[in-house]
View 1 (cartoon, rainbow, N blue to C red):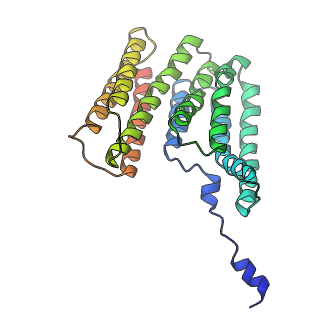
View 2: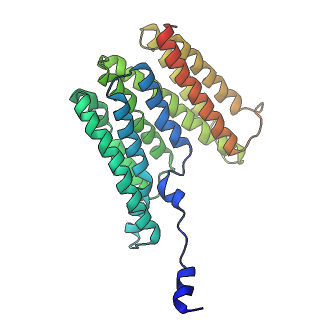
View 3: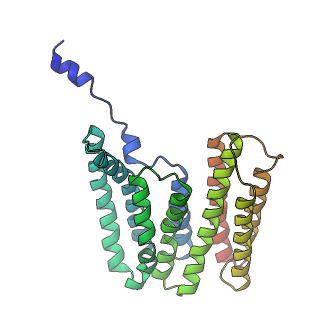
Length: 272
């Protein structure tokens, strides 16, 4: 066998999935919960294009992370080339969504996106420095990506207070859940964890959503769902919990997220 053939055989294989898609499974929930809820309760001609733009921006993050990491280390690897290709492809998706959104939505619709630019920049920095799994990075990431629901609502001519409260409800769902999942995983792994912080965060979220419902900004069905989330956090961090693997905890959060979105949609259309 020739040396050239041997050289080709020894080339490292590129894990395309790891370059093209986010490795954090929970981030998909951060993406689709506000998008699905927003399109369902505030449908407009602009909403699918806003969603396409957000999905494109979301997908750009992983290949950009690979490129920035390799650039910082002064290397150009086969995975870097693959990352550049995916970044360009996702940029086209983002560009198409952005162009259509600008054409179909009013400029005021994009105010929530403008507000979270510092958060997005901070998350890119965390990605580049390999700190994307730190608590602060996850929290600011959830705030940034959930802004899509406010943009969709304003594009459907919702008043600013109502649109921003809708955004706040999604944040109130995501942040306590992040705190719960992190501490639940610590507990299952026998590491130091906090029981009070996640439960307090869920309690504050439930009180906030209850206040929003009393003022006509949220369905009471969503208040009920936030009560379930609070109970889930109390039981899940107690001695009465069932020990489960990380994957099952993640699947559970997808289910809770889906139910929360359903509570918003059903409550909005039924008035309950």
